[in-house]
Image: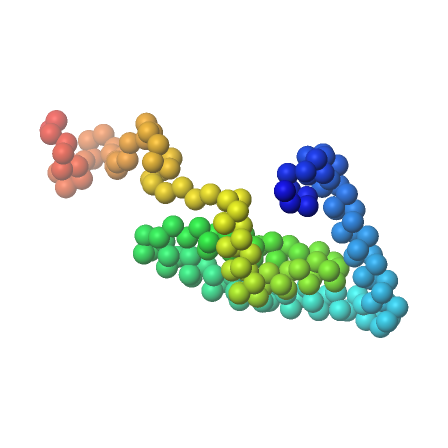
Length: 169
């Protein structure tokens, strides 16, 4: 059994609160440590620079990743890993927007493509995300009927406007 997963600690409803408070305290410690080393103004400048750099990298990688997803879909593939990587890219952007050096470090780690692929493969391998194939509804029975229609005003219909299978006229 894992250290945390499956243990009563994970089932505790206060666990996310403790994790959040721990991260906040870690970031405060990071600000104090960096501020002591380089000064308060430089610390604020570093936070802004890392956020701006990270968001620029996210934007560049996001466009590249979006194109790869579209190409996978065009080939008829289910881009499960690509979707998880996209989610990780968005998580990286959120981490980079949060002020702090530890969240920035985690965000930059997720921006490194081999590390992001490794994380996505781990998520898929553990079954944390499942992909369904098939049409709308994942191959289950549906009452949806696909078709097309045209809206016609009364008396203004030309013979070319009628649908081919309209045999009432």
